[in-house]
Image 1: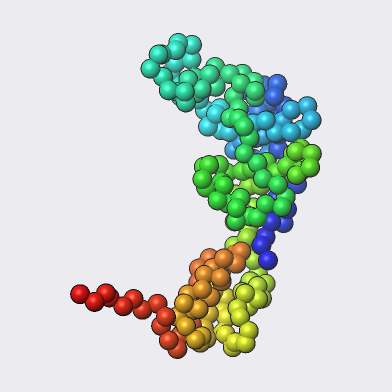
Image 2: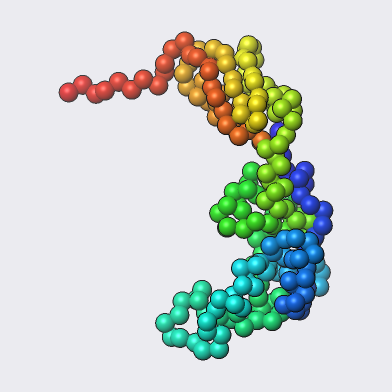
Length: 218
């Protein structure tokens, strides 16, 4: 069973309005100890995100008022942010969001690909912010009780077995015997996909190797 965002997300929607000032954004980040806040419209729908990196441009951007013809679009946008004083001017848009039903694994991939540490969670019907998913929430998946993890691992193993399963610190060791080597590989991959598995040590043996590659005759 896949773990979804609703199972681990924070129920507090950390957000500011588009007209929020620089100081108000900093205060919100400090209050909730976060590195970013969602920017929402009057209907609480996210329109962007302001991160610490966006705010730091105030200090590191050397040119705030002059424009070079040789600037890239990214550089021009960074200069605009450095001169910004409201959330609407500072934010990165559009906001990258997830829903309560998004799989945690998919949310983790999104965080990694976009280099972000938190995601606004929106209601799938209204589009309004209903919570926040932090990296630490995602990492909680890897602290599941060993008994719970073992039960889910056994659920993906075929019947009849018997297969042995040992879980220690998220590492799953499986043993047993199958007909084909391809089945042993598939079993290890199925266990690896279980939410909360850190690594798999497979001691499953096969009676025959159906993956032998026969070289072509010369």
